[in-house]
Length: 194
Image 1 (cartoon, rainbow, N blue to C red):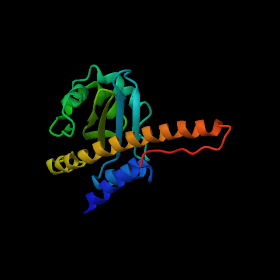
Image 2 (tube, helix red, strand yellow):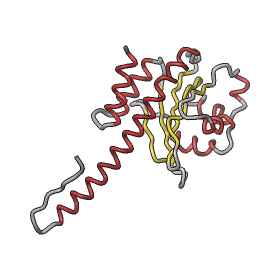
Image 3 (cartoon, rainbow, N blue to C red):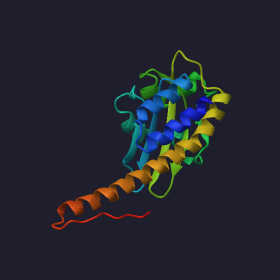
């Protein structure tokens, strides 16, 4: 039942009815996490096209670090290679392996993060979006049940991002129409589909 409310919140946020950070805070709280970040990259340019996070924002430079390590870190590359909807985590990785991984050693661990769970939300010719949720150094790793639970939610994250992209596109087209009407010297009506 709790996940039903979280899912409803995702769709409300995608429609612009509630702020994304509030919804993401509830999701993180339900997983006993400390942060969640969704990053979407514009594939043609490699630039960040989407960045959503909890009200407790990620450490300064998170997006820069993700982009910096994306090309070289085998874990980030692995995340980019997984299919949409598949959960990835660092469960079972020992401390030595994490200490040898620059992304963990140089960035996540110094910023109090330790355990990560996430997945790919969407990918098409224009956008690839990944989600990562973190727990702190003193917390336990995400377990297999939490991985399955996140797997069930990834589908709704994907649909929410698609809805949000469509809503933004529709609003942009609507804004153009309104701007044209505003310049009209004669009374006019904006008529759309439906």
